[in-house]
Image (cartoon, rainbow, N blue to C red):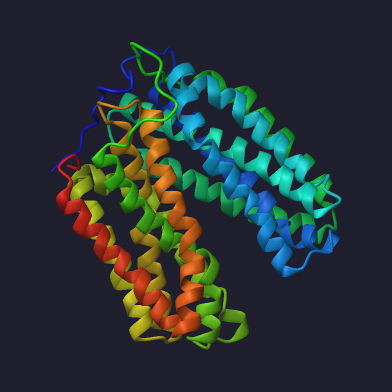
Length: 394
């Protein structure tokens, strides 16, 4: 079974004087750049916490400003991209995202940091919706599945940003100096590569409404994204705790759970497109859902270092291509502009990323951390079930 790209909704037949490989590289670099910027911020959270003398509770409350900024901008981001095109919005929003990174280092009080994080989240969401819409357009222009590799570039940027952050801290550079090293790098790449982007503007007979009634299929896709991103959030925030408290891993191996998960997620994104092209998105989504469940339940049933590591690797491979596939399916919807469809699905999915970690904490408080991971494992089964019911997935 082969997978083709539906171009009915996104004007991908536009001509370009640049080769498909050049366009693909440019989009990949935008993903890499966004991962680099976000990881640069994440790597300096402990330093900012110490500099502002924040308690754990205060920091937790302040950090909510970032996802709040992302969520409140979802409808606006989709509408702006639908009206002006992903290329124009991406060219304007990405430099702003890097600038907002530098502002974070200016905070001298907790409320300063919260305000700057709100702006960071707003600009980040504009980039996210525009970039994923551009990726759907580029994938259609390319003629075969490549969305997964784009998200792999983001993961690679995240990994690189973490390494750069570690280097900056070991060199005893201030947070401000660190961020001002990253920002010009991001701006330079944008200046060089924005010309290679496709216009990516959907033909509209009338301006899209600010709020649109969600289609049933988009809600279903959003629920799948919710389940996948809940698993991602759980692995990001709780994998180390699980290895420490349940697996009883030695201190030097506590990081192994998250490292094995993130490594396999990155690898899965770079190799996933070939499997999608061969077996189709429906089969791949069903397989990935089963893999997430089996990996989670394996680590719950046999909480030993080697087995749990294998289980976490399976989860990493499973979640690696779910979101890229969901964005492609949503973006090729023929009744809603690509950017608005992606924004709708992202809004629902992002709640999973926010609610997954707290859900694990609540269940663990009532029962045990193993029960929490078992519940998240059930999300994979739900993904496979929902996929079988959605006719739009082929």
